Image (cartoon, rainbow, N blue to C red):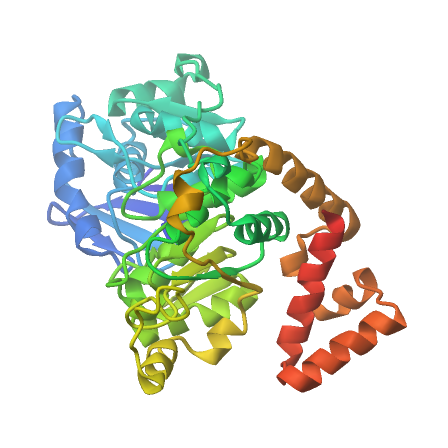
Length: 477
């Protein structure tokens, strides 16, 4: 035959839209043309494919070869189409005869014909599993590919091995379908925190309902230590949550690492980070810090030091649980359901309200410093806790009894979360207003008290709902 159609998949955030690689071999001057909105890396594939075929013992037809990547309006980038192009040329030139209507091929070719790993493979494996087709990927991607538990996943290390497997299904090597082993990080234990009973309680409530938390206190009071213990209080991710997070990490510059499997992510970007680094973006849009913290914790230390525009990009994702990156040709949505934990000083010098009286900041300076964080952003923070500096006597004296560690608190957190999931199917921080009225049935005295507080403190509707959500979590505990 002179025409072959091979199935492949493009990279579009954590989506993997299908692409048909159409290869036509016809008369005319010898040459190879790739059409269908290819990027530079895709246009260069013709040289890689030509060398890989020749070094694998195949011949290049001395005819005109046209390769179309359909749909034509979808941008294509990377070397993931190399294998599909090579197999398409072999099929169209009758050097390979195989049934390819139910197979997808993804892989980059070296000049020798070896298969190299491709970026953002996990979304393609998951999309192929949903389609029901078999999928062939490089064996170098085995650690990522087996996570999706694709029942028809095939792997190879060379173009010749792919051809052999397509001719005879028994030639595919057996797959190690064992789940990845997670190397749990050594989170700081809550038992290391001396004093701060109020802040410890706030951490437990925040972990139970996945509420946003602000820690306000002078330098050295233990705000960063408290925040670093939060991932150790949370249960490990479910397999569905871990797969979603792994898909996001697979699309990032750092890629997915199997030792992080089912771990609660903890992202701690520096205050010099840009809005694109926080929300995601770039020429080829990649996920940002808020998406890499999906189902986990985003810790912003020295909150007022972040640029105002960087902090404002957090507002919509905190409400919707996703971020949209808009480009001229495409829009990419990344999940971003994160738990914000922030720390800041009460004033520019950091010692406002300290018993030592060392703060000499003027009222205007304090207002300007706190004004760097907008009111609408603070309105989305459920818990705002003061973390005072402990006196040296309390820090240096031996503790009368050891403080409660993370493992004991985690048991209560897991039990409270299970109550929320059984009742509403989500955690309390994610409750919609209409669902909140059903799960927070207040008696008349409680409703009157909340109404009086709202009028006296001029609380917004979001703030009133926030109080109800936190109260519901405390009741669940």
